[in-house]
Image (cartoon, rainbow, N blue to C red; front, side, top):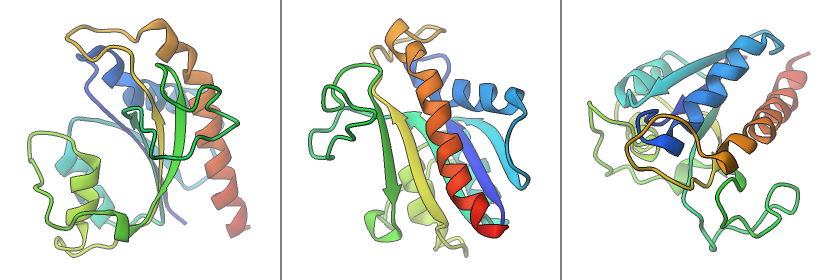
Length: 171
């Protein structure tokens, strides 16, 4: 089984760098199951698309996500319903949730567009999750805000939990 943890976002837009920071910390931690690859994709959407075409069974995207009252809150991670900065969301993405007509920007990162175009490129959407954090600030600057920094351990734990659910199935 091939599992890919993809940190996505722009580290030069403060909290948009959440995904790359989680990926960096997970990769340096060294306590991941065999068959798990952790990559900081940053804003390289085409790179992610090509890596998915190589064959991935499970994809865990880690990214900043907007607060969304339409998504049911997770009582474990969303004490306030998921609207305040630092709130975490764990979402399962299905291929029917994606727009196949989305435009894939070769110089940017839109994970929904990457996944939406995957079938057109000759691939299949793997089992996909998003571990997302509501940002406080996505203006130009380097460094996460305090509420998003505080969410890093919880996001890492959510990723590890997803990994254990899927990698334990292969043993």
